[in-house]
Image (cartoon, rainbow, N blue to C red; front, top):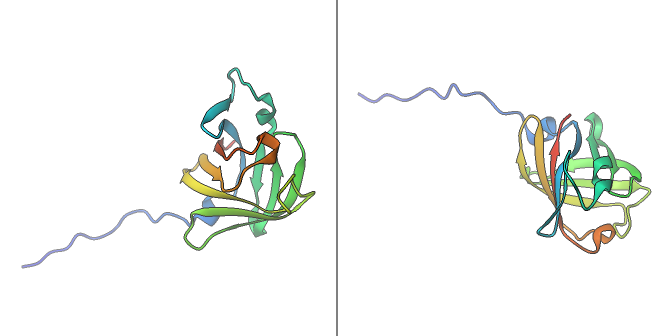
Length: 134
């Protein structure tokens, strides 16, 4: 006699649904150097203004370390590992209006992403962002 276990587990919503939130920086590394922790002392306090707002319909608002807010669109890759912001206006320095991030982890209220290209605003470093909602 053969028996099988019923799956019965909770189905996880797609990344594109779960990521639709307003995110702020919990901590940031520029390269391998920690430069910001929310509520702590920081060498880069500008990250307290960092925001990544991903709304339904693919609408994105991105506020970087310099406090400038750009608007554009966002999309998740088919393998759910990359977040792309495109058509950003005004275009962030050195980006031609596009910034992509590798998604390392995502929970209901935390998101860890790493920029796929260097940020000219931070001296050409590849930055890792641990974000929280709210």
